[in-house]
Each structure stands twice: as C-alpha cells, then as structure tokens.
Length: 571
Ligand SMILES: *[C@@H]1O[C@H](CO)[C@@H](O)[C@H](O)[C@H]1NC(C)=O
Ligand SMILES: *[C@@H]1O[C@H](CO)[C@@H](O)[C@H](O)[C@H]1NC(C)=O
Ligand SMILES: *[C@@H]1O[C@H](CO)[C@@H](O)[C@H](O)[C@H]1NC(C)=O
Ligand SMILES: *[C@@H]1O[C@H](CO)[C@@H](O)[C@H](O)[C@H]1NC(C)=O
Ligand SMILES: *[C@@H]1O[C@H](CO)[C@@H](O)[C@H](O)[C@H]1NC(C)=O
Ligand SMILES: *[C@@H]1O[C@H](CO)[C@@H](O)[C@H](O)[C@H]1NC(C)=O
Ligand SMILES: *[C@@H]1O[C@H](CO)[C@@H](O)[C@H](O)[C@H]1NC(C)=O
Ligand SMILES: *[C@@H]1O[C@H](CO)[C@@H](O)[C@H](O)[C@H]1NC(C)=O
Ligand SMILES: *[C@@H]1O[C@H](CO)[C@@H](O)[C@H](O)[C@H]1NC(C)=O
Ligand SMILES: *[C@@H]1O[C@H](CO)[C@@H](O)[C@H](O)[C@H]1NC(C)=O
Ligand SMILES: *[C@@H]1O[C@H](CO)[C@@H](O)[C@H](O)[C@H]1NC(C)=O
Ligand SMILES: *[C@@H]1O[C@H](CO)[C@@H](O)[C@H](O)[C@H]1NC(C)=O
Ligand SMILES: [Cu+2]
Image (cartoon, rainbow, N blue to C red; front, top):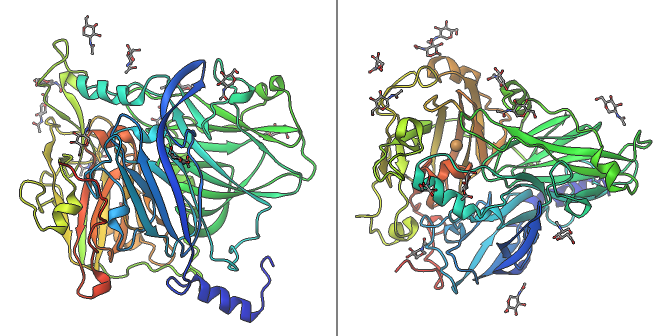
C-alpha cells in the first residue's frame, strides 16, 4: 500500500488514528523476575532479569490496545516496573515509580499492570523503577499504528529494536550503595552495550559478544533506538551511512538526515537506514561513545556493533574503522543535532502545543552538596569533604515511605508530602556563572499541586554548581512540547520571543543543555501524581526529582479511578 491511498483509505486511516475510536485488542504478558547467570567481558555473574532474558523481552502493541502485564517478583529485592513514556491516561496506578504511584513488590509478591496505549505510536520501553535495578531489567515497548494506518514515511523492509546500555562487572546495586555511603561519585560502568552486547572494542569480548545487524543491499531498515544506559548520554553513528530520524519518544517528527545522533538515557528515536546498493565494504562499524561535561569520572569507552552485508570473520569485524564521533565534551555537536527536531505537525498528527499558559515555573536543575555527617574512614568523598547531592530549586527530593498516589487518593497528606514545592528558586544567583559558596541543598518530599487542565510552562535551568552538566529530565504521565532552549541564564524578556509555538518537538525526556535552559509546555489533563526527574540514575539517587500532583477534573472521566485491589502495600 505504501504512501498511495485513495481518499476513502485516508479517511479510514484518519478515523482509525483517532484515540478512542478503535476498540483495540488486549495483549497479555507475564514477567517472571528471576536471577540469571550471564557472562560479559569474562565476568560471570547473576543478574536480575525478566523471564531469564537480558535485555528483557520485547512488548508489541498497536495504538489503542490494552496491555496487561502480570509481574511476579522472584528475586531477593524490591522491584517495580515503569512503562517509560506511556501516557497512562487515568491509569496512574500502573505507572510504576516506587513510592510515587505504588509501593514496591517485595520478594514473592505479584502485581498486574493494566493500562491502554492511546494516542502514541513508535518506540517506548519498559524498565524497573527501583534503585538501579533498571541496569538489567529493561526491554523495548513497540507501539505499531492501528491496523491499516500507514507510517507517514515509506514502510521499512525490517524494524530492529536496538537498546543501548551499560554493563558493570560489579553489581550496580553495590555500586550505588557504596557511593551513597561514601558521599562520592559512583564507580563507572565497564562497557557500553548494543542489545546487551559490548562488542569487539573491549578485552575479552568475542564474536558472540558482538551485536550484528545483517542487511540486504538497497533495503531500508528502521532502527528503534533506546538509550537504556544508567548514567550516560551517547553519541551514535554508523560508518559511511546517513540516518534519517522519523520519530522521537513515540511521536512522529519531520524527517531529517544526520550522520551522528545524540540520545539521552530515557529517550527513544526511530531512524531509517538505507543499505547501499553497491556497498564499498562487506561490513561497517556502528559505534556509541559518551557525551558529558561532568567534573567526575565517567565511562570514556567506545562500543561497536556491526552492520553486515555479508558474513564476516571476527578478525575482520575487530578491525573495522569506527565512524568518527564528536569529542566527549562537544556540546556544539549536541546543540546542532537537537536543534533539528520538529514535530510532524500534519493534519493527521497535529501539534497541540498550548498557546496560552496558566502557570509559569522556573526550576534550577543541578548538583549540590550535603554536610558530611556519618563519614566513612573519617571523610566523605564528595567535593571538599561533603556528600554529593542534587536538586531542583535547591530541594533535594526525599523518597517517602509510602506511595504518594495512595496518600493523594486517600487525601492523607500529613507526614507524607508537602504541597509547597517552590515555583522559582528562593535564592537567586548567576546560575551559569560562578557558583555560590554555599552549595548545600535542602530536603523534602514537596510537590506542586495543579488544578485539572492547567496549562503549564516550565523553564528548566542548568546550574554550574559542581560543574555545569547536561541533565535529561523525564516527565511521567505526559508528553511535553519543547518550545524554547538556549545557553546561559534564561531571560523571559528576551527569550520568549524565540519560542516555537508552531511545530515544537513533543517528547517525554529532554536534556537541559550544559550551562543552558529549556522551556517545555504541557496541559495537566491526566489526574495523578507524576514524578519529573533526571534520567541519569546517579542524579536521581542524589535527589534530582520532584512531583506534580494533578487533581481530578469535575467530570467522571476526569477522575483517578480507585487503585487495583492487588496494588502492593507498604506496611
Ligand atoms: C513464569 O513462571 C511460571 C511458574 O514458574 C511458569 O509457569 C510460566 O511459564 C513462567 N512464564 C514465563 C513467561 O516465563
Ligand atoms: C569501586 O572501585 C573501587 C576502586 O577500583 C573498588 O575498590 C571498589 O570495590 C569498587 N566498588 C564496587 C562496589 O565495585
Ligand atoms: C560467549 O561464549 C563464552 C564461551 O562459550 C560464554 O562463556 C559467554 O557467556 C558467551 N557470551 C555471550 C555474550 O553470549
Ligand atoms: C567511509 O568514509 C570515510 C570518510 O568518512 C572514507 O575515508 C572511507 O573510505 C569510507 N569507507 C568505505 C568502505 O566506504
Ligand atoms: C576520553 O577518551 C578520548 C579518546 O578516546 C580522549 O581524547 C579524552 O582525553 C578522554 N577524556 C577523558 C576525560 O578521559
Ligand atoms: C573538552 O575536553 C578537552 C580535553 O579532553 C579540553 O581541552 C577542551 O577544552 C574541552 N572543551 C570544552 C568545551 O570544555
Ligand atoms: C575504609 O578503610 C578500610 C581500612 O583501611 C578499607 O578496607 C575500606 O575499604 C575503607 N572504606 C572505604 C569506603 O574507603
Ligand atoms: C571547604 O569547606 C570548609 C569547611 O566547611 C570551608 O571553610 C571552605 O571554604 C570550603 N572550601 C571550598 C573550596 O569550598
Ligand atoms: C554570569 O556569569 C557569566 C559567566 O561567568 C558571565 O558571562 C555573565 O556576565 C554573568 N551574568 C551576570 C548577570 O552577572
Ligand atoms: C565566597 O568565598 C570567597 C572566598 O572565600 C569570598 O571572597 C567571597 O566573598 C564569598 N562570596 C560570598 C557571596 O559569600
Ligand atoms: C536582550 O538581549 C540583548 C542582546 O543579548 C541585550 O542587549 C538586552 O539587554 C536584552 N534585553 C533584556 C531585557 O534583557
Ligand atoms: C522494600 O519495600 C518494603 C515495602 O515498601 C519496605 O518496607 C522495605 O523497606 C523495602 N526494602 C528495601 C531494601 O528497600
Ligand atoms: Cu542529571
């Protein structure tokens, strides 16, 4: 069928794409969370997995379907699952972040995640949302358009999920535990991975540890890219091939060509790759390497996979030239790439960007410190004998002991949360200039209450405290429109004039630029408690998050339903 359809077909496609008009199917999956033994880089260890697989199983649904995932926790650890990017319209109980929308499943417990996928299509993913367990508990969530509705680009010959990840020879739980004890930065990963495989740039990683994408000349492939790394934004390139970006975070974008991509933890991107009709080599390297400006250490390795036109021996694969990637701190390359994103904004997929704003928020995002207290061996390993912390508006998020959503549903807020998260920093300073002397953060479980249907604008401003750094901020329960971005300190008088209110990209995760700012808008039309946090797990562990409490609307279909009967309790 391709791009050619009669008017009737177009009308049908249009109707099918309207949320609610298609009944959709119910798709059921079982997740047995079990330990399994895997070997990478000559290190054999037991890791948490779903159904014994690493990375975990792919979930495939069509837009409009209901997804029911029956999870059984059979490991000796608390766990929850998050369906990253799924809007969860009136199904907040299925969102998954521990202590926000549910208490964790304790060892031996089960919970059924039950929700519909509405108004989204493309690639999302699922991952554990407890401590750093998502290091190995993650997998793709593919959302196909409703049956009979074509992509707004030529149908690819094949579609291949490609999850980028990080491998630790140590247990990631031990790594974050040690960091929180010493107050210092956590140990970094040992390798980056493609669908769990590190590839030939590392010692002790052979042919069976290398991901291969076999292609046929002249065919077009769609890579469903997912950055599942714990702590690293990544550059991505395929030697001698140009990529065309067509989707981001399960929304279509205006297609654009790029040789180097940048993808942050939490983000997804569908890209088309057309195999050469007369390839100049039988194989080409696919590579990832980090983008960071951290003042701490980071995994500064490059990982490769193989684009294979004809079977190759491992010796040949190992010698493939890697595509040129920008230097690890090349913010210019990142800006150049991110500036190309525009929503498709077509008649069928309009950009519903809020043109007016009811409530403006200005959030500083960055690192900070806590006094040493309980030192290990007499010192703390954070800057100047402190402990590392992170915050939004200098409030470092304190994980509650019970679920915020449950507290909200029962209207029992006392001792659980305070509805006074600051709309702007209490202390003003030159956010991207010289950092203030006092870098200590405050602590609290503070939320912003929002009336149903409030139109919200948030400016996220990076700070230079402990070093200016890019932070991929992820909002649960919503896609937002990225209306503006810039470097230095946001200046409302000057910067709003440059906003794109026509075709801004719609995403669920956006990187606050290094020493810069980004402005996002969303309409609070989904009742629940929604966490917004940095998707670098180290920053999340240090408190870089806050939550929006979106109240019910007046109509019956604007209210949060009661919790499922099997929701795990905290007591
Ligand atoms: C999950 O475990 C149960 C009980 O051991 C088993 O019957 C079922 O087949 C498992 N499901 C999957 C998807 O592995
Ligand atoms: C972190 O790295 C240090 C130095 O290499 C090592 O001594 C320590 O055991 C590591 N911690 C973990 C949890 O692996
Ligand atoms: C590769 O093969 C070795 C030796 O058989 C095995 O120990 C290892 O688990 C394999 N690695 C992968 C990633 O399959
Ligand atoms: C790949 O591109 C590089 C330039 O970026 C060129 O030097 C090289 O010859 C090309 N390799 C092949 C096999 O086409
Ligand atoms: C990271 O590695 C690159 C080469 O791959 C090197 O040029 C750079 O200095 C390294 N940076 C750090 C901070 O180690
Ligand atoms: C990037 O790092 C290199 C050293 O690896 C340094 O010389 C350069 O100044 C850095 N660039 C920026 C923009 O920080
Ligand atoms: C504390 O000191 C002991 C003895 O020197 C050492 O074994 C241990 O690794 C140290 N702990 C940390 C977190 O540095
Ligand atoms: C380090 O901390 C000490 C004591 O809190 C303080 O007096 C000093 O100014 C700090 N130095 C720096 C460089 O922050
Ligand atoms: C903030 O700091 C930057 C970088 O040092 C400097 O260029 C700028 O002039 C400062 N802005 C103000 C208002 O002081
Ligand atoms: C910060 O500390 C420096 C050096 O200790 C001092 O000169 C400066 O006045 C302090 N600034 C503020 C705002 O307290
Ligand atoms: C707007 O930016 C220009 C150029 O950077 C600057 O001269 C002007 O003072 C700014 N206006 C305001 C209101 O800050
Ligand atoms: C696991 O979850 C239960 C229920 O919320 C909680 O009481 C317990 O402290 C948690 N355990 C860990 C290690 O976080
Ligand atoms: Cu961050």
